[in-house]
Amino acid sequence: MTLTLGDLKSRERQEVTFTLECSGNSAFPFNKGLVGNATWAGTSLAALLDEAGVEESGIEVVFWGADAGEQTWRDEITVTEQFARSMSLTDAMNPDNLLAYEMNGEELPNLHGYPVRLIAPGWYGVANVKWLTRIEVMDRRYQGNFMARDYVTIREEERDGETVWTFTSVSRARLKSAPAKVTRQGDRYSIMGAAWGAPIAGVEVRIDEEPWQPATLTEGEGSEYAWTFWTFDWGTPSPGEHTVTSRAIAKDGEVQPAPDDPLLVGKQTYWESNGQITRRIKIP
Image (cartoon, rainbow, N blue to C red; front, side, top):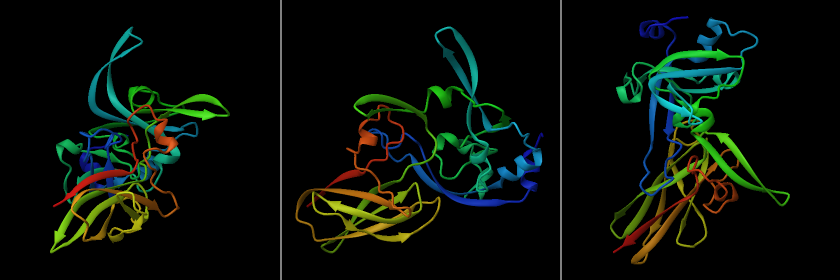
């Protein structure tokens, strides 16, 4: 099938509010803030695949973007490769996946993939292919550069006393939260932040090395794909430097891991860094 932008806009319109995060966000001190929330609008990917007619042998769906660059394989073969990412047919048929042409009620901006991009709610940014030009259903796994070589999380694990290395392609977003700012009213202080990566049931805050205390969810509680805001009444802290740490709790009981969690300690690449974030605050 060949479709123009007008063809896509003539199809049934669908919206989803989704917090999109780069899989490398907060991996380094200088690499923060690579996350944002928007309401995306477009047409259903699943409906389009149904109409196109996926053959019985089809198992993988590849999304190709217009951006391209040279890649060298084994120091022998240099090719010009289009950016592409894939997911299983089952994942692609999620009814919330969109071929999006609007962002926050306006035409999709150039930097966000105009004229059309894939929006796959719940997946890291790399999977949400921008400047979409082609969708291909394959009967085998796709192993392009950004699936098999780059955006691959490498972990060292101990199993039965032996070291085992695992290699997984970056895919679904992980549970995360962050303290965003501290405000003062009179002599009382309040902390606010956000949590995302899963439907949020609660957020807890720890000041210095004190016990965890519950924060108050203020907006977006239980949203499936959008972030949830929270506040914490700090009261009247003593002057000097303090540490503020938050951890998100998902509706399924998952808790955002500490930085020394084995899942994070054994990770040798910076993708998918969702450990608890600590900020230092100086009270005058």
